[in-house]
Amino acid sequence: MVKVYTIASGKGGTGKTTTSANLSTCLAELGKETYVMDADMGMANLGIIMGMEDVPITLHEVLAGNAKVSEAVYEGPCGVKVVPSGISLKGFQNADPDRLRDVMRELIGECEFLIIDAPAGISRDGVIPLAIADEVILIVNPELSSMVDALKTKILTELVGGSVKGAILTRATMENTEVSKQKMEEVLGVKVIGIIPEDPNTRRSAAYKSPLVIKYPDSDAAKAYRKIAANLAGTP
Ligand code: ADP
Ligand code: MG
Image 1 (tube, rainbow, N blue to C red):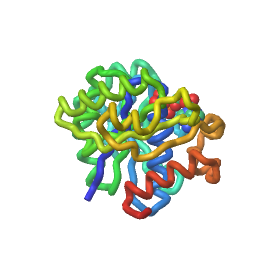
Image 2 (image 1 turned 30 degrees about the horizontal axis):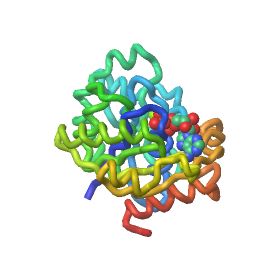
Image 3 (image 1 turned 90 degrees about the vertical axis):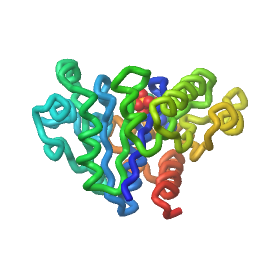
């Protein structure tokens, strides 16, 4: 059975792209046929942090009706299949988010997991990934503004007929000024399915255009991502 997870948060910069890249790489490392798609079409970052920023055909061309989905699939670490978005504004303008559902249908014929990196905000291209996933995973930082935006994303997901699996608390330092896991669960009304610590290796790995779990496999954040992936894959 294919599982489609959309990685969303409402707020920008919470760690959606980092989480999409690392979870999908971990799932592939576990032997699962995994695709990861960059649905943040305006601020496409997934290809950049996975070393595919200058590929000729991206999701933009597919959504503009100028290329086939299979032409926009590139192999990443551990065999994860990456569908990057383009980085040009012109490409973004020509891409039609209403075609995302068709792209997803084509990809799910091929895989066991499809991870969708969603944009921030509540624009049309942001809402479609919430509706088309089997389940949405909320990426939240331990601060009030992030929690409020995640709650809005959860409500929006349910409004469009989607459902939320849980939240991943990222960039946690465990300082006592942070919103706690318990508080987060109480306010969001969903389980926190993993905690990723604040880890400077995350930024370093992005500079090397390689996911953290590959570049710094023994880092605390990499270990935390592997644990979440094992749970999603049912192989803890
Ligand atoms: P989003 O996709 O939600 O906008 P990103 O994944 O691009 O967020 O992350 C935003 C920034 O935060 C990036 O510079 C990234 O390297 C950094 N970051 C993400 N997760 C962590 C972490 N656990 N520790 C430290 N920095 C992180
Ligand atoms: Mg992003």
